[in-house]
Image (cartoon, rainbow, N blue to C red; front, side, top):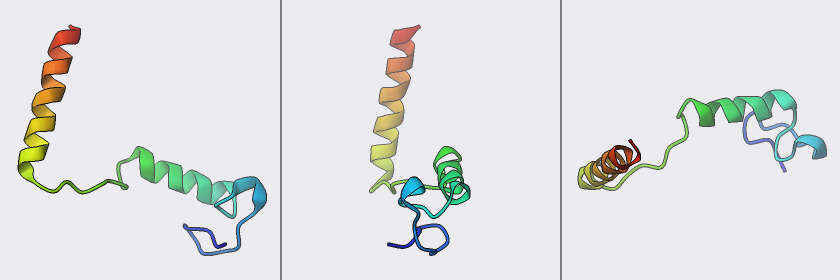
Length: 60
């Protein structure tokens, strides 16, 4: 199995990565929003925004 970041062979301690560096690079991509699931329509985005806004108002 090869590392999804650099393509090197994986190391069991960091699997599926080859090193802590590649594992950290992958984590950084998740945290900064580089990985995202594309939505199928703008209507879905608006509905989710409305729902999040409603939930936020209910919490306060």
